[in-house]
Image (cartoon, rainbow, N blue to C red; front, top):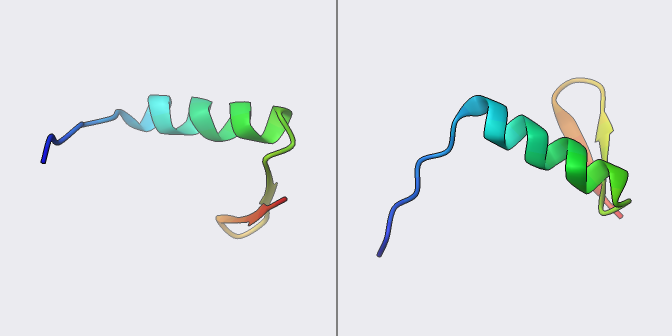
Length: 35
């Protein structure tokens, strides 16, 4: 298995991109909802 290491910034940017695409909704308390 190939391991990939992502920085915190890369993960946060990916989450915001998914939110903009209406794939997920970021909620309070470090939670998210898949749409």
